[in-house]
Image 1: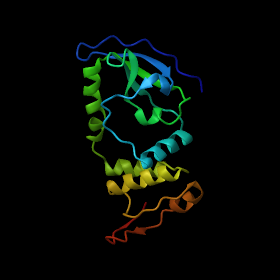
Image 2: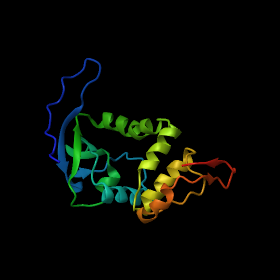
Image 3: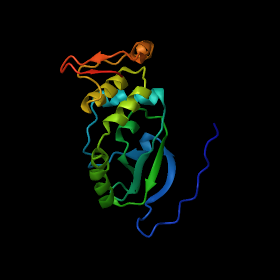
Image 4: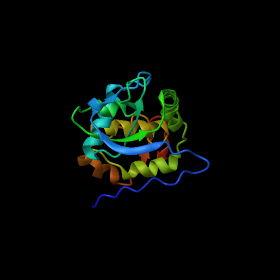
Length: 184
């Protein structure tokens, strides 16, 4: 598939300022961690991110800005875990036109705003039926997501791609905890 060509930035809206300067590929050594980074990345998250990267590849950008406190060097607002995975991997980075105070504002709100979204159990169930993974950490992530939102019974054990056919059968399943019977 041919790569999409870059488009010029849209004309600024009178409502919102466009703070995106450019898309640039940077290696991790060119990007400092934000000194106020407050999110910790446990091994389970690292394993799941690595699994998605192995199966899908890079499908997102890091958010960076040029920090006065860092002598004008690039500093991460989002993407700390991804940039830590491979020192030689250039990452697509959206370079923002923000200062150190604004970067702290973004750092404190970026992930929490995403976490405020609510889940539609029906849409999540439909989505999970479409997704399969050969990566154990990704399977566990999807199972936890389904359990958390009530679309998979507690204790659901995902299977690899080789066992997927067994799950594709539309046989009734009885929840061991509550006895409810449902058809996938």
